[in-house]
Image (cartoon, rainbow, N blue to C red; front, side, top):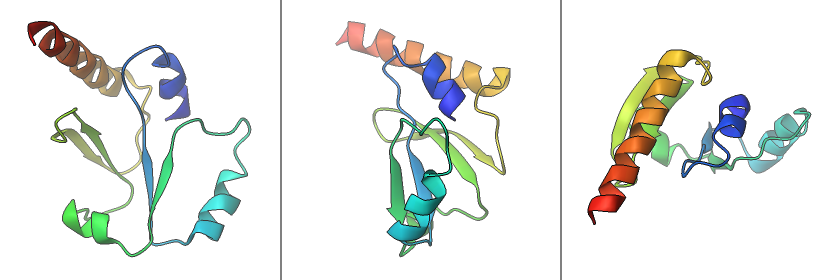
Length: 104
């Protein structure tokens, strides 16, 4: 995710990770192992409320969400976010949002 985030640094796009079921201390210890550090937010769902609301069935599950909060892409299992097929979905959504902003 960090590699793709770096490639999209100048774009109106953000990665957000959600950790499921672990407390803040466990997550902080895990994140300290990254060198360089991650530059996107990592949120906690330690009580699994969001996981249930989004009907997550397996971990990891990834979503690409548009500005309206609609899931536009969903994948279960590990993903290479810099892979061409994933990156093309991200790029298409960025372009779509830019077009919508011009129409407003």
